Image (tube, rainbow, N blue to C red; front, side, top):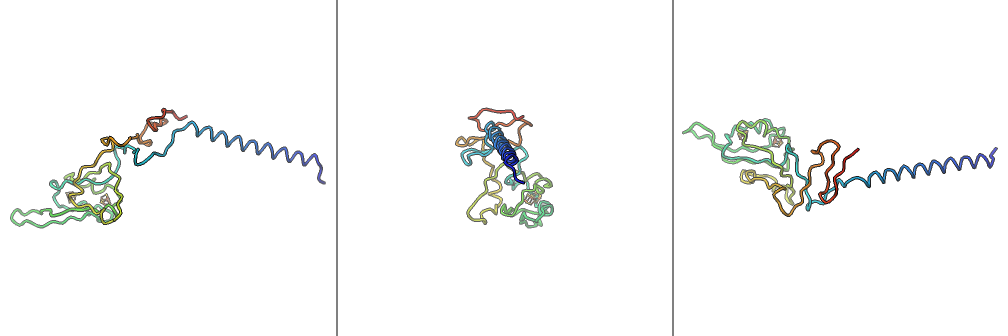
Amino acid sequence: MFSPINGFKNYSKQAIQAARYIGQGFIVTIDHMNRLPITIQYPYEKLIPSERFRGRIHFEFDKCIACEVCVRVCPINLPVVNWELKKTIKKKQLKSYSIDFGICIFCGNCVEYCPTNCLSMTEEYELSTYDRHELNYDQTALGRLPISVIEDPTIETLSNLISLSKGVMEGHSNLRNITLT
Ligand code: SF4
Ligand code: SF4
């Protein structure tokens, strides 16, 4: 049978539970107030890519021997190597070279296996365009040196949070550094 004492006990229990949940919520909020923001104000702020970042590929036309190793090791046979055989010197002569970054998965296999090191991965990651056909880079586009975010005076660069030492998080330069517990 329902008694007022049991009802009061239940009500008290629920009130204590609710207060505990509210307290836990406040603790989480206070904990996050002590942290720096992870998001950045792109494009006015940019992260400095890590040393091993795999961005747009750079190609040196003069060093390429048209061996097509890059095509064979590419999971999708992507690089297009156009060459002709020079019978007088009995050597291949490179005519054109292209990589479509609309398809490339930036695995780095071509860079890894190129025997003459004419391919390298840059820190360039801003490849967006309105027309996907513009992502098909020929040897001229591939030969352009990347623009480092550090050299751009209009951009505020931020350290890559992932590349920092364990427990240290250096966020926006105008904010203080904190050490995570
Ligand atoms: S592997 Fe290197 S040298 Fe050979 S075709 Fe590709 S880019 Fe040229
Ligand atoms: S990075 Fe990978 S997917 Fe892109 S061209 Fe090289 S081997 Fe192919």
